[in-house]
Image 1: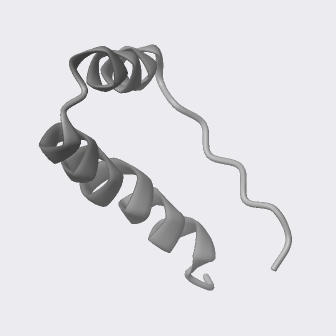
Image 2 (image 1 turned 60 degrees about the horizontal axis):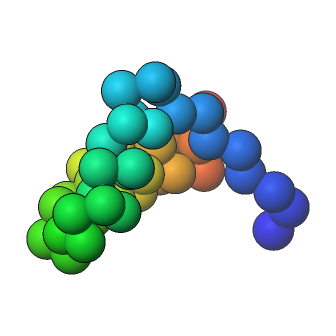
Length: 47
């Protein structure tokens, strides 16, 4: 597989930085599942 590039909105970047500061593993998992994994599935699904 080649590269996959995902763009993050300014709000999403802020959320990632807040997760990092808070060291919230639950919030991090939620972000990965609801935002990143969802976008990856959309990108990788043939049209």
